[in-house]
Image (cartoon, rainbow, N blue to C red; front, side, top):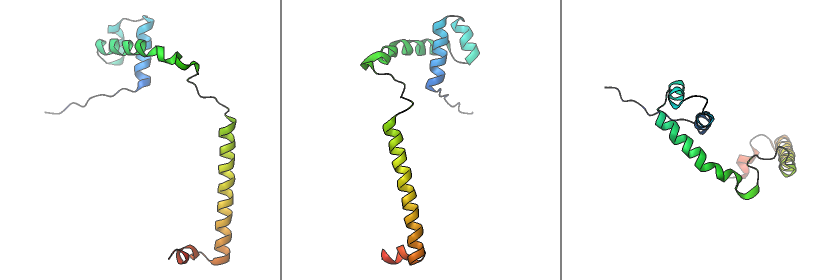
Length: 107
């Protein structure tokens, strides 16, 4: 006998199916056939969506991260500059002391 593996669905897929069920443009049976899942599963996902939807509006903050974050941009700029300086220092130290100089210093 072959053992059947359990299917795992992504949160995006569950939300998509639950939203379609909420629209009520198709019956649960039609959606179940379309997505090859049991109608009870669709009902459960629909209940989860409705039950968790109130948390989207808690705290008064948007769930969507801001596109232009000046602090993040500044940090990326600093990291880039430090990487350039580090690469330059490595190159110059190899020119002055030779390629294997770090190994002899750490011993």
